[in-house]
Amino acid sequence: MLAYTKTTEGLSVTVQSYFLEERSDVVQRNFFFVYFITLRNHGTAPVKLLRRHWDIHDSGAPDYEVDGDGVVGEQPVIKPGATYHYNSFCVLKSFEGHMEGTYTMQREDGTTFAATIPRFYLKARLN
Image 1 (cartoon, rainbow, N blue to C red):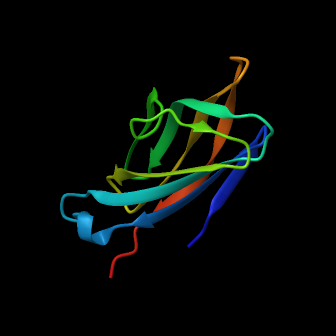
Image 2: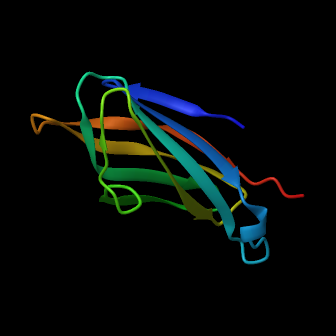
């Protein structure tokens, strides 16, 4: 399995994705993918994840965007040297696509930066 990583201002974002055939329905054209995210703070001060922005490309449907506060109902503070893990999912209308985006991160002084979520690929492999 591939891992995609990008580091922005000392925060690394690593993504791994899986196709879940048992949750998918080829006839209805619903292809279910789960992805696992790890954020690691390589900096010297804590950062807080405020918002997420996703650009989602589905090779069988129009592209779309998703924005929202935090991730999975949380706005975690990631201390120096610490990691934060979560997983979520995406349903595509085709066998493949990709996702990428940004997290809005807040420093202790209240300033923010956009941490890049690397582009990762979603490819269905049917048995």
